[in-house]
Image (tube, rainbow, N blue to C red; front, top):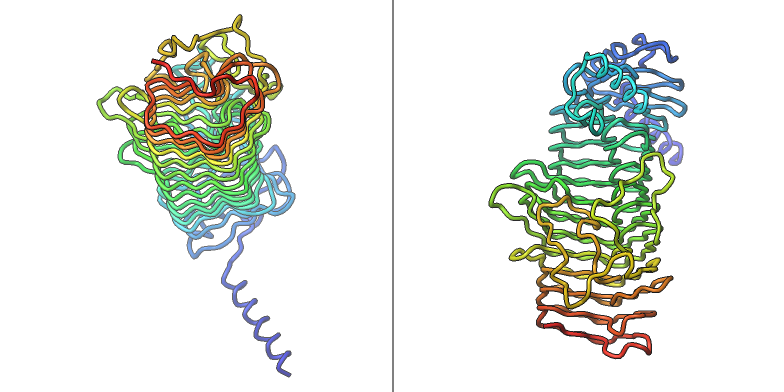
Length: 505
């Protein structure tokens, strides 16, 4: 009797919970499957009906074409297994001015995208439509004839602005003409178990957080032609803070996990755990403050980078035109293992990263660089293992150690690891930094490299404890210039190293 009573209680409770969630099927509101039907009105009518009291909007199995639709508070858009929501391929369906996103929300709360279906923006077809409209003079664009249509002319897939309590779960989201997911000024976001497949066009970051806070991104698989997961701060005092990323896999023709480039406000309390970055053109980890904003309290642990152009890039620059300078401090990166090939890591993908504009150079090291008078502060690197392709040659490019000042500062340059051109080290290049520690570092290369492993230029308070260099053609491992308060111990180096640490005047 007791077991039966418990069963009935649980059954009743379950029915009560289910009864609280009203469902609204888009087919019941006039939506029709098939590529010949445009269902924008039917889907929006369904969302509006669900928004009156809250509920789940069901997209059943089948292909449903739509233009932009707007989520309302309390509404979950749920795509059943086998459901595919297809973006219209007529650019005019997204408006004649700035392109409206396929799924948008403004100032809403408690909204969700969920299910086992697919949202397919059909970005390549939209751009084809856009280009024809530009040729006809129906739409205007400032850059399309010299570069490509501007981002404002290409619809994003998901754009939520000033929203709170957001969930995006389980879906496959693909083929955007612009950013795939854009969360601007949002609070309390959960993104979990989402697959992004977006290599159809340029500027299609997998996940963008702009001035957003209290965010969890977990268990996602991202393949994007631009940055995989990117945090941006647009406008002052706009801030990204309390962001957690864990257990994600990223492929990118730009960078894997990036903070910046847009960095006018700031970034605080960012935690990354257990990510894999592969076949990625730029950096596995890129932290960039160049517009007068700040980056502080970033804790990254557990990074595997396979066939990636650069392992770590940390940059304090000055791209903004006013007198406000950026700051970068309190950075920890631990348990990172990277393979940096002497090849283009994203070769063969539909939209590859651009060739460097800085001229020929050898394979580039990890970079941590501030600018004169403005130092990156308090960086801790622990349990780092990087294997480089090597193969450097003085016939390609060469900066003699006595001429380290030849490395350009490029204070206002677009931040990326190739922005300095040739660099004088093969493992790490560190300049304009106060307070940096290396603990348990292993570096190796597959083909000969004539450069030293480390160059420290204008660095204060350097601690190295546990360094293993597998091989070296250069007689020196560590070069110090204008570097003070150093402590170096527990180093293992090849027998041919005659003077491991060389201090330059």
